[in-house]
Length: 95
Image 1: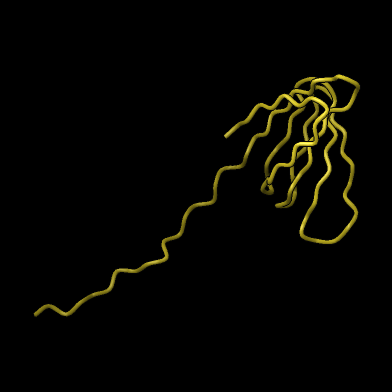
Image 2: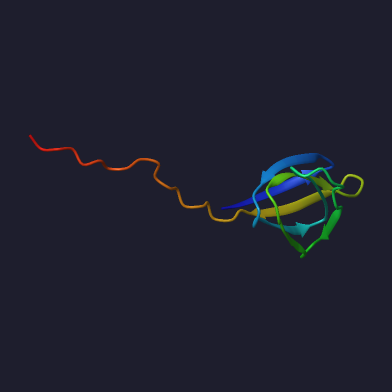
C-alpha cells in the first residue's frame, strides 16, 4: 500500500514497520525516529528523488524543512505478514 503525504512545517508522527520505504517527491524531508531501544535518533534528510528504507518498527517523525515549504512524501508500506490461524480442527468421535 502506498500513501502520498503533503507536509507543511508540521511534525507528523507515523508508526512504520521495518521494510517500509519513504520517497521524497518534492521539497526536503527531515526524518527522525523513536524506537524501542533507548538510543540517539539519527537525523535523515531526503531531497526530491531520494529514498530511505526503514530498518526497524518504530514511530517516525516526518517534518518539512524550509520556511513555508511543502514537502511531498510517498510512504510505501511493506506487504502485511501472512496471518497464522490460532485454532485447530479437532476430531470428535462419531456416535
